[in-house]
Image (cartoon, rainbow, N blue to C red):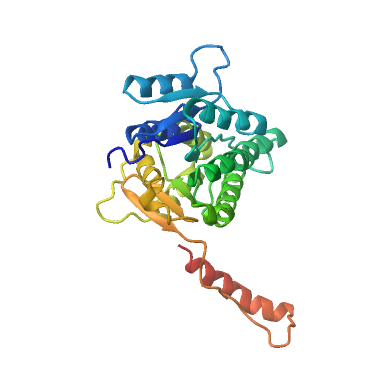
Length: 308
């Protein structure tokens, strides 16, 4: 593609590093003006958002930095106002900001649980809530949310993060239907293992689990079978994630909405939550422990065997 987004304006949250930085640069490369939003530097130095905005401008693009905390709806409102004031419109929202606070749920602090939900779930809601009116006023647009694989695979110390990302997936599906009539498409992209600080933080938090860590890695590798030709040589670079998101923000992809995509390096999978129901039935709406003991184990086994 070349200049597919000429004249468009995008906001990227968490745009100062990792996948967010890659999104900001990729959107700019296709002609979009970009509001790069990330938290300010606590030490008062040049922020990550300012660095990325400067990189984009040095490459000939248009970008400004913003320092919104996505968990604060007033901050998010000002972020959208920045796009409108600096560039006159808003066409694209990439709700990418995220944090991780690895811990078993029974030992996680309420503060870490609340922070994780605030950034991922409430933050995604805040961004959509404030950006949608501008997208509608502009005649349409695109929203990309950032999810994570929320299958039955167990990720040690990752319950809060995965609960938050499951909420993002539900938010995205509902908003896709609500905004369809306004020519706005909403899709979730779920990065696989990607070389980012967040992935490093998570892997570092479980490296001391010994056999459990090895079991997790083996189970994950078996669960996400890679087709022939797809590299399995460690986390992919952040730049491998945005191309699909950029495509979904173009006019030719506007009809694609309400989808969840997994992107891992050279692999793109459409993830569906719609599966054939697996059930047992009682003709008289009556159950007893003996029958349940006979039938429920087989039901569970069959259902787990049918998971993607």
